[in-house]
Length: 495
Image 1 (cartoon, rainbow, N blue to C red):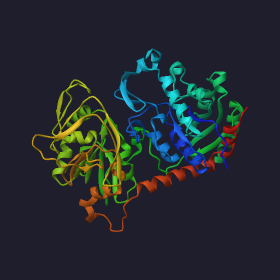
Image 2 (image 1 turned 135 degrees about the horizontal axis):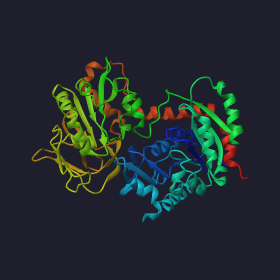
Image 3 (image 1 turned 180 degrees about the vertical axis):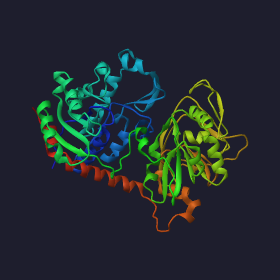
Image 4 (image 1 turned 60 degrees about the vertical axis):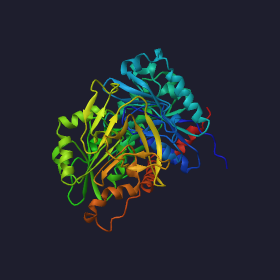
């Protein structure tokens, strides 16, 4: 039986970090389970945590996660505009998966209409293409919908919902307090036309006995004139990849006894931290993030992650003593793995002749790998396969080659014959491949020198199976606390 066509649904927020991304992933999985063919959409995202599509183009990681929950390949139409912060005032602008330059925040937000690129037209066209292929479209807003000073240039919230003829569900975070004011104020500050688009409310991150909010639910419906579709409890036992490094504060920061300790160096401009999510759930090891030199010195494995600013973070590693701690730990037997920018830092030098990252043209690297990196215009973004069935993706600027007469010793060779990375030995290696650790064999390779400390009963961790299970658990959780039947009625209403 053919499923009815549903309106697009937008999860808009009373503020940032209220849980829109995770709820959008939940709806993508629920609609898929119910026989629909959903797709996610966020017109504009601001994040360092990006992902490469099958076509080798760049989008925000959150939309890639939501596409995975929907069971479809990710595409740039799901996130046509991506802003990657470079400083407090500037961001790299990625349009339809390709960088088109950097913009000052003031110019972008206050002078968007004077841009030679009509961003509003571009994101609307992307939505239209997506809506012609999928139904329903699960849209995600950004930040708060009531930033009145930015309304004229807003590309992602209510103006986008108007273009899409979407039903808007407002998400409020009760955990941070003030949920009545934030929900009521967010609705009251809209124009009459935009207020009419808001068809429901979801209260997110509730802690405690839900019965204590029964009166609150009725009060909200009375003062807002909008039904509360659900009150979703806070959870810690379902693991969905986070959108950006704001969540790093909640991650482990110390070594642990009795396991292989894996330290991710906490860089100032750390990007793509989801590279390490798989390690957080592997029972054979303990993953933690640190810039503490004593903890680095005690680590069994040190991973230098990707960064949005290689030279700046390399300079900081030298200034704060982490570079010396990493080198010393390696001399005492620790394994060091560099990924993307971390791989570049492990070399003899990093060159920036075009001043792409600033005024510094050369910095010496950690000297752990006999390679040299030259930053250059153009960005490599692509998905890669190797060893027959391993996979990952590249997102980087710069070319890395052996230094002097150093021999070629690639980390892996792609199925297309191209070489990647460098291996000094099994305790010192670097690669450009994000997602490399999602391949169980790679984690086994990383842990091989410590096999005598790993219980023989410990099984390799299957991350793909784990992620699929998490999406199903998330869908079950949201179904339990959100009136999905009422949501379907809203999305089919033709009033």
